[in-house]
Image 1 (cartoon, rainbow, N blue to C red):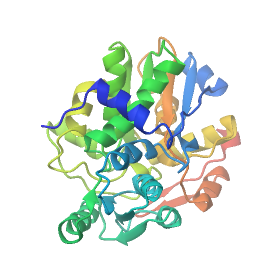
Image 2 (image 1 turned 90 degrees about the vertical axis):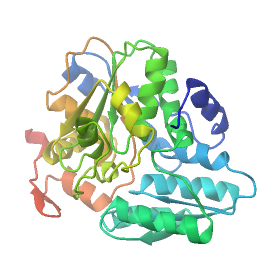
Image 3 (image 1 turned 30 degrees about the vertical axis):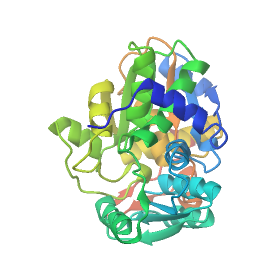
Image 4 (image 1 turned 180 degrees about the horizontal axis):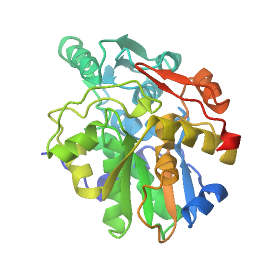
Length: 337
């Protein structure tokens, strides 16, 4: 069984210091009013790759033996960007495997950073099979997007920063996908202050970690197109670390609808002048939907990334309908909401 310690997270913080930045934690006056307490935004979308994933990817890549010639991973977009960026810093090859559900803008973003891309199948599991083939046949080193102690330790550095920036946090809302971010941050927070309430937030359709925690074991779920596409994908049936971390250290998991994510993306844009992915806005959606437990003190949510299709963003900001596979998210004029 793989393990992680708070010392691993402190070591990751030192290791990635020259690659990943310390991101701002800013209050949102509008959301604070809605919450009845100070509501803080941790701006991970200001990282050099536009997403928090740089932390875990850099920690893993910078920990590799100097003889390593190349790395590979499966990704819904942002992990691939992090791996490509960190690999370029070391001058080694990076091959990122993705499913056909990953938006073209995220594929191009990885290629712009020097990464090679492979588009395989309709699910994260299909992409993983290609990744494992590259390990077996080409000798590349796999860097898991979430079930890797070095990746999780890198993401956990956000928890250390949150407490440095606000030492009396009552609650932290974390976008939840494969659990590397949620597991790492929740573990770091709870090791330092067990009283902090940590809540994972995901979309209603295809929430793999939520369904796995409910089942008591990692399970497969059907994947769907979503405004929160960065939260898609499975957690792996052989998950050894992020699943037990989320099961033990998350106090609750909240699911939000596509309509609620749509409105949350409008809120953060019009009220805080920030552009972010749908997966970044799920904590705001949880607040606006009234699903949070009573708030006693400062609340923070992690704005995980900004690497989205700006044409879709423009549609949402202008209140137009958005088509997601077999469903239509109805447009809504923010000024009338």
